Image 1: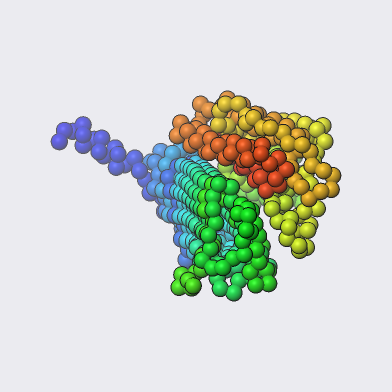
Image 2 (image 1 turned 60 degrees about the vertical axis):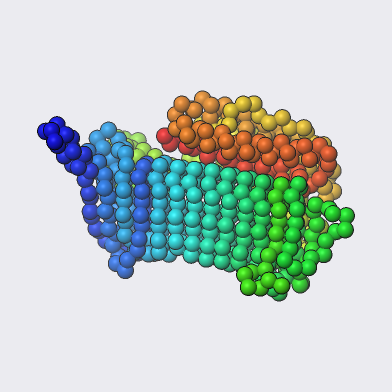
Length: 285
Length: 226
Ligand SMILES: [Zn+2]
């Protein structure tokens, strides 16, 4: 091995530096973090303090500005924002989170505060969140579970999965499927252009459910005993149901029927795909 | 006055200070470079996080408003219940002048949006006739179409102007997704040509157009951050 090579290896090793800092916070504070590139992992613990472990360029520093209500974290070099930072942050679960990044992946677990994450080209994976949960990407997939509240998830060129969550949901993508699994929403709206939509969960008596796709299928699970008024609209697509449904004899592409007392409003639209009403697993007739 | 504290600065950016303190902080900022720098930095961070303070944020664009109301209408008219009845009472029709004014306002404020654009000319919409004043039928009015065309054209222009600032992959992804939406809009328009007063198709068209504007806006936002 030449000296030059050894030197350059050393240089690579020492380019990266780790910052590790812990400080007290109010349990109801808000944490704001902007990470242009890299990854952000957030976990919780039973202490009223925040620990930040960050791997970053040796030429940059991690800055924490902390007032009783808001913690602001970012990274700076002498010439402005640096490049890639890998964060591992541990917080009290009750903190509100406001995270953003351009080319950054986010992975958040166990937070019981509000969560807002924007990543333009990065995947967002969240387990938890209360009251308001807003996840927004352009090129990344969104995976949300165990959230409760007003949920807004949006991406453009990837898929959305929401599971074991309740409250109200808006989910939008263009080029990707939307899976809503084991959910319990009183109101849910989901739309995509190129992808299927699956809803598997509770249908509230006074709830409303609106799902629309242009090119994909819609799979909507209807538990036995559901009270719902269901509107179906297909263009070039077709319709099928696991159970008896009153259908127009003229083969109309738009029709509506009532199950039980008709409580919930369900609207399913697919321009070019199939709309299927299914019984939950194990309830097939 | 001493330098502004971090706490005051956060509250100032959030618009959460009382009137007196807000004025005091404002006055200090006018005379203190150091605090002004700190404010600018925090503002840019907050902007990156998508949480612009209310007063700095451009008015929500008209087209989204139109399309959102349209989505409210959806295809529930036949259902005889309170909620649905409320939705069906709605009809969309804006005087041309009002729509033009709104479009102008959007464009004036759109430096912040940056933009998107899939390239190419705006979609070629066949205009549907305005809706009857009270009927249940829903169609998009020509003024709405004009507003939409203006908004899309402006966003596309801005996006093209900033294309160099965007990552090539991002440009490709945005363009592909705009093409997906445009293809859908094309198919909806074909269907509408056969059935111009079909309210499902009209509502669907409005939603597709709203989504296209939203995707263009996301791309703009992206260009502004890179
Ligand atoms: Zn000062």
